[in-house]
Image (tube, rainbow, N blue to C red; front, side, top):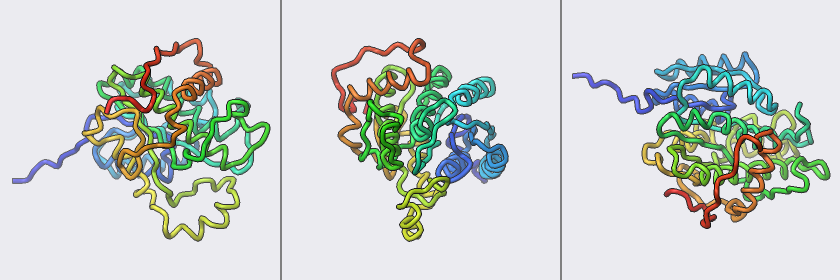
Length: 305
């Protein structure tokens, strides 16, 4: 007697940003193979549609493709509107999109590109989709950070790198912001059915930073490439955090190699997290829309286990 193959994520809708290549594409492929209904984003229409075709071939569920440049806040808002119109539920939001620029670039909103894309885009998109996530029974917000967050420092006097810019410093700051955002979001969502976790995917062989590479990327990455993770290996932690049944109630945690790890000491600073939240809300125009929740005493990652 033939057994019907188990499709663990059948009926689940998952949105993965930045899914046209690298870790994001591998994440979408892995989730599709588990039967999820995938929605993906990319900034180039042709590449996004090509990725959607590959993901459809890999899975048994539906795949929807959205085109948006998430470094631009009007594009984030348009994307959110289109997603809400098309998707009646969102079970998982994977904030994967990100980048590295060695020299300072400014977005259409007049913001430093790294901070705008790596932190403000997931901050705004999550807020705009949060009500739909809450309506979808148990839901998850998964944000791809990096071990580089440990070298990060939130410089509130120069968030946009106007006084002094370093590609590495801007990137580390944005990745620390990802973890601080995740912990603060988890705190604000306590008592709801939505969890929030962050992760380090590992050092992966992708085209990361290729648009504007720094000295390290130009000189050393080609030498290290044979020893780096493949995109599929790098996506393993994202897929695990997005789909593992035993993580349904796990929130406010940081993962690496699919296991809970301690993040940097700075990432547990609740005062910095609250200040960053407020500054981010002002930069994306959400201050009037979201009032901060009361702050509990436990600030050292004290969320649901």
